[in-house]
Image (tube, rainbow, N blue to C red):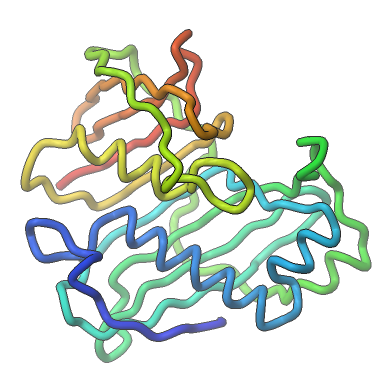
Length: 235
């Protein structure tokens, strides 16, 4: 497992003094991008190959979110890579290797120029280090949200939310969706299914639903076609 070290910064915490959900995703994403850079498969390589890795889904399990100032380690591993699909695990460790959170992500390779799926060759797949998957309960990639109960005001995608692929960064969907959770609520699981990429200037219409202990926030276009579905399971 590839690992990086860090310490929770004041700019990464919420009102409760703990790491926010979208900054947790940022730690995970940064860890995997550092790994790819270190093995020669980073940003420059992807640009040369006309490739982008588009995340299709997240499943994040949270034992607890670290507080400001805590020292942490972030780990990631690739457990499968076949055809156009890639699969990763992430783990957030605290002191004494306490497992604070862990995650599964599924994504696919795309051509930046055409937006079409790209199937990697066997030679390309062999460049990725494959390790045994993290032990966890793996849930389906797709999320079936119940009928919307509330429709919120539209939000326009801003420049600061855009990544190097010209799409809204994956963590920003969770940052927006988190705004519609009740105050002081404790989230123990986050699942995200990405349907299509939001771009600069797009309008997101959040819809809200609840089913038992799960809050569903769907970020839609103005015709109510979803960009992403975010499901928060709470304690």
